[in-house]
Image (cartoon, rainbow, N blue to C red; front, top):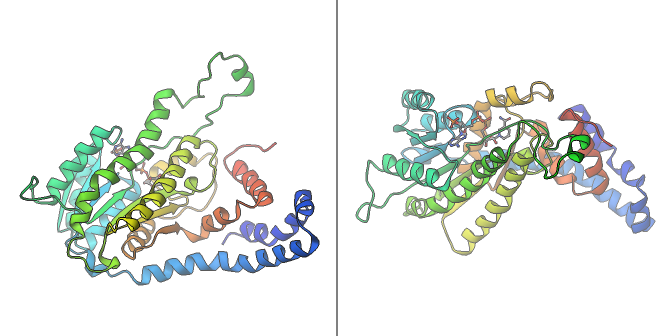
Length: 361
Ligand SMILES: NC(=O)c1ccc[n+]([C@@H]2O[C@H](COP(=O)([O-])OP(=O)(O)OC[C@H]3O[C@@H](n4cnc5c(N)ncnc54)[C@H](OP(=O)(O)O)[C@@H]3O)[C@@H](O)[C@H]2O)c1
């Protein structure tokens, strides 16, 4: 737990006391109670979520994953590549989707070496619903031995939604430049096309793929008797899905959308008795080539390792966890729990802006 986070949390009640709206809204008695509740909640917030995650990880049974059919989207590098290796070591069949063929083939070869029951490189572009559908169909066929159709319905045990496009830069031009524009245009490196692509790949394709894969996932779960053996959807999100993220505002918007969509879909699945669990993974900064190249000039935080992140993701998903925050040392679970409180929101947002290389008002 970084020292800055501890100081921030310990000072929270004092900061609350300093805010006039709180004095106006709350009588002294209620204020004291609220302060006590907050103080009592802090150790809980700091420990309960990581402990719950440890407990969830402990109930993960690796043997169940052997022979399962797993589709990993965005597997040509970074965290997706490591997720593919985790499933390979567990003896699963893996279909690996991304656009770069040679990288995908290399990952598939390494997955076979690590013990995958089979590994298939499926070149596909999730930038459109057709591209997502084609990649899904090709993956399902590969995982089901080339089958398909009425007599051999395609089945899937795990769908990992991990692919993403990421850019780093202010969306808004400077105020002086905005004044000179008739119709607003985003600042470089953004463009109208880049905005469509960021929402299309990072949000819409996740929605399409989850909906289109659902029948195969239900068939995959046939014969499973417990929640622990249900089919899985794994959604790789980010701290930017829970908190604001200047210089990645479109990415943050899409990631926030994932939580709204998949938290709702989980409840629909519960109501319709669909045997599919959904695990949303809120990742902090992870040392992939993409993250390092995007943030190296601005963000100076110790980063998590892709292999460890992938391990935590797979364990949580197969323990049926609804949400994973990783790594806990980056305290995303604390920040996203506390931000709804107005004074902490103000404070956390200033820290966020500062860490993104910006300046507050
Ligand atoms: N690294 C971090 O610090 C961090 C932090 C929080 C959350 N995350 C999340 O973790 C996930 C993986 O991040 P990462 O850092 O590992 O990213 P990465 O190394 O850039 O990998 C992204 C993957 O997505 C694929 N991809 C991108 N656009 C695609 C498209 N249109 N169609 C199909 N595949 C596409 C890429 O393959 P091709 O280029 O070959 O298509 C690549 O395999 C993302 O969802 C990201 O938002 C990462």
